[in-house]
Amino acid sequence: MMFKGSKGPPAVASNLTTSLLKARIDGTATPFLEHRHRGWELGLPAYIERSAELAKPPIIIAVGGGKGGVGKSLVSANLAVRMAGNGVRVLAIDLDIGGANLHTYFGISAPAHNLADAIVYGRRSVPEVIIPSGVHGVSLIAGGGEEAWGGSNGIHEGTLRKLFQAIFSLKQMGLADLVILDLGAGTHRHTLDFFAAAHLGLMTVLPEPTSIENAYLFFKTSLFRLIENVGDNLGLPDIAGIARRHLLSTDGGGRGRGGYTDRLRSVAQEHPAFIQQVGLAMASRTVGIAINQVRGQKDIDVGKSMELIGERYFGFQTRYCGYLNYDEAAWKSLRNRRLLVVDFPHSVLSKRFTELARVMLSNLGY
Image 1: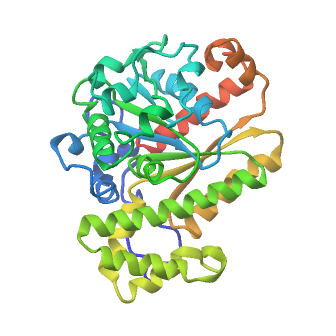
Image 2: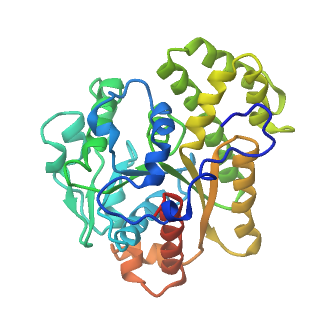
């Protein structure tokens, strides 16, 4: 895929048959993901070791969005359950560094051992910090506290490399077919790296201005990080720097006519091969949109608008995966320390999670 001369958003699946898109889970990567593997790997951070595990990773979904309080952990926990209902072994990992609480949504008290014990301190192996969620087919790794990740042994390329290696090994170790990464708020470099590693990055957004603005910032910083990754992986950091500076030098933050996609096309006039590889990396991962706490049709329509902007202005393979109604069942289930889809299985919100999981799996080729 090339930006140069293209008038529409990038597309990846146009040459895939319907049978590939409907491939069933059989313990191996779907043909759809195999088709996208080269571009997906091209967009990973350069410090990640290229290994045999990287060739056949589990399906990776990252739930982010930039702003706190938009329901990322609620979505991560209940999506895990609904996806496991399709016969997938799901592992949910809490990567909200400093604010880990995913276990609470499963109704589990803080475990004795967590991700930091395996990655930061090396006191346990990764399999040893995996705990059952109480739901068949779903397991969990709780996140460590800020004191673990904030010190000298915390977040740096060494620990991140170790963490990614562990994630990529989960399928070959027989521990998970699909991994859900529950990300923290903000656009920290490590958060962008987790999002870049996802086959599908789901942005959870509230239908209100600050959340939408933060989501667009997340689009922008993810794009810049992806360009940097491609440059590092190709040994062309100088050209990546040229592309980034060109995007930053424009007025309107890329939100003017044509947005960042047109500006990347202009860079392609001088560096066509590099921008082609950036396009491949972008087209090989999907950015999903989920609008949370919807109260009416106007809120529902926010998701479609964001899908169009994600494609036309930022150039990502963007899909509006669904919406979640405002429902008091969400806080009631948390107060009861039970999963929403278990505590209120017949609620409208529970049905929305079923549909959200179905659409996301479809976009991953299932």
